[in-house]
Image (cartoon, rainbow, N blue to C red; front, side, top):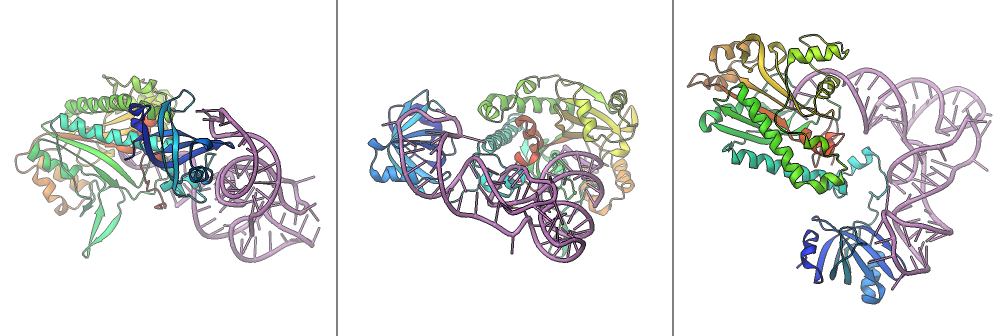
Length: 429
RNA sequence: UCCUCGGUAGCUCAAUGGUAGAGCAAUCGGCUGUUAACCGAUUGGUUGGGGGUUCAAGUCCCUCCCGAGGAGCCA
């Protein structure tokens, strides 16, 4: 029975067996130092020629990086070992020799690493980022579970475009066109009338030909939707959610953030209460900073960074001109030309990580907006029904998982925040 | 889709228009505490494809393909 490397500290001075892959090897004529990775951690194994059989010694010599190996020996605390514990081998075996493994311990270019994404996953930075992603997803589920939300999985194959704006991936559904979902929101709103507080988390798809570090063709989104929640409550929910997730990452992923060389100081500052400015104020700030932008323009990446740089924690921007936002956003009662929508901009140039709004709950207004946006009324009949049978104010938001993970990890590109990124013209491996 | 930069050994990169090279990896040898170990040797090339200019092209021109960075759109 193999012992996970992670648990070796609990087995000091015991004979243990570790199975894994050879991460690196340094050897001399009579002693070899092998770094063995088993998925739970990396441990150094010391193979001395005088203490193992000839077969074991020969296997140590022929073992190449990333070969699958098995070592048996005594676990001993030792300051000279990376990790504090090392295994003094009594036996060593190569289970499968890796021949010409393409990724070395030296530098590689991004294109090469992406071509070898399936192997790149094995390297320390990638493992750390994916563990953070896993922790974030678990923290999301825990947050909603503890706050009594019900998980509602929204469909991935959909008959129409949710927002009518983005370009979607089209496929064939027994002779009819179908589209890969770009958001679960429209399906969550009816569920909110059934279960009150609901959320979905899953992959979403955009066929936009975006070629930036902040876009993927396939990305994961988490979207809560809450019945009888109005705009101010939405702001509070969003803030609680983000504070909870960041705290969880700081709490549980210290080691991974260290591997990623992430400066955690900016993350430590993510506490209540987040600054909150209106779209109008945002435009004024940008103009003051010398940007050429006028009321009615949308923010570019640089604009978001300038706005975020004004504050030491994430900042809400809300109340956008109705014309530039999705059709379903509730008008601001104080100024019907503004929508009760919010964006949350992350610090350090990570940009918009959350977008949310209060939804229109008046049937006739929503129907009019659907018409104004040139959307087919019949396709949205079911969505309008929610406003027909016991309508209710409700709000929700969507957060891009990869953007959040990239922010936590300090990654410069979303492609490292998801195991197998789908990017413009790139779908291999 | 547009703009900019790039494509030379398995990888990262050199090479005034004039004999294609280094480090790493791999292979072989040496070394009893290494930390991307070190030392010595060996192997490794249709310079992304096609066309053109020239006595001569990795280098200059055209074209196509691929990649990176940025823009727009957004999460």
